Length: 440
Image 1 (cartoon, rainbow, N blue to C red):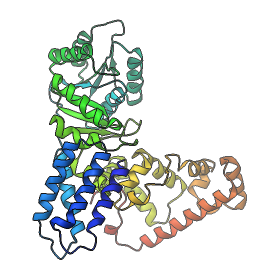
Image 2 (image 1 turned 60 degrees about the vertical axis):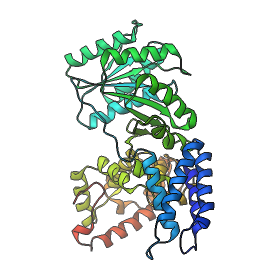
Image 3 (image 1 turned 90 degrees about the vertical axis):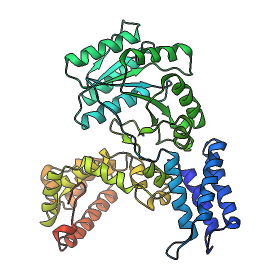
Image 4 (image 1 turned 180 degrees about the vertical axis):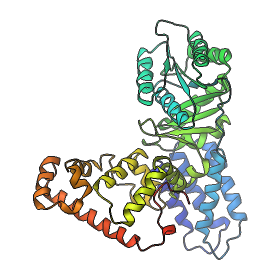
């Protein structure tokens, strides 16, 4: 995401390469290029100008110490300003009450209903007991969609298909939640293709009736400045508490993420990418600024790993590696854990320096399918005992997996090389060898 903006900003910083210090003259072109990059990313001109004016004022007033270059100082200033532009700090998500009530609003097609399912799934990981409410009385498919999502994550869905009163549905759902000891109610409201008075009045009436602790406005980040204008219209009527940016895995230019907080003075609370129900992240302005500037986001990557890798299993795996007993079943299990962490290209982009290197490379989430097919064609005995796989067994595995012998042999060779590296790791002290997700 934000690939074009990242490239443009990186190009702008190169204007200062070789300069000994920052002054009015050499910073002029850099600031101009930054402003153009922001405008091309669909950031409002006024916001872009105010942003670059602040950057210029700070840069000219800063002293460049010997340890860093003017370009590095400029990156730091822009990072700080981007962080402030997007809210400065992580915003709290309030789920207090008996039950806590979360009202979700937004236009049709923004990913609102999918987000409701993702939020319910997220709250389950926070030890909450959510109830999803289908309050979209105009689109029958919305009720069905919410029920399917609820089944996938094991969350109850309240609906009244024959009722045409969204306020009554919301009120009855809260009674249902109390009777079933559900401590969070998530109300998915109706959306439209464009803002209209009927929709605004209905969602405002639901707000008045249930007094939600959180009102989240869901916006498609691919719509850029239009998303900001829509957010303002909703905020004028609802005074929502936070914004959710969806579809950040698409061709996102960045305008919505960079402009919404400035325009409506409400924080971005969550960002969503992909269709998987665990593809929801709390929004951290500083981390997003780092990603926009191509610095990666190692903190989020570590948190994702910790969420997926079980510490007990990681310790068992560490013991197997130390005894040189790591096998194909262990390898397969680790692949499944990595896949649960999210989109592969996004994950790799969180590693500092990698994002730029892979920006033009198409990394499919199906990248592991060939390996999985090969391992899946092995017998349990072969998975647990890699050394027994001779040429005859490889031929059978090749036929069973639908992969040619060259691929099978290549994978076997890579696996052996990996085991050799693990042997070298055996010589390291225990403190230097930690599996993902293991805390010191």
